[in-house]
Length: 125
Figure (cartoon, rainbow, N blue to C red):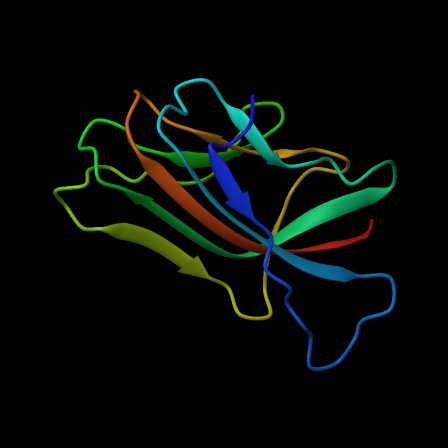
């Protein structure tokens, strides 16, 4: 399963880091009640480092969250569209490290419009 729409903006680093790649993904789905991998596992010996995450939903019952390929919650859930339009985490130079060689998925509690943006790095463990 894939997101209904997705784009991958080009993110340019001010200073390149040896062995690291910075990327971003932006997309939405109308039903993420089944987890949707939107960042692939980077391969053996590599991890994903999530630096900025924005979750949005215009559905009060969707409660989207970001999780790894094993279902471990990394960020979220957005509790209710009524509580605010989005949930944002910006770690600047910090990051949430995803377990080595694990994908990142969008998951919601129920069907409904959910939107996600993630800026991340891929690097050797």
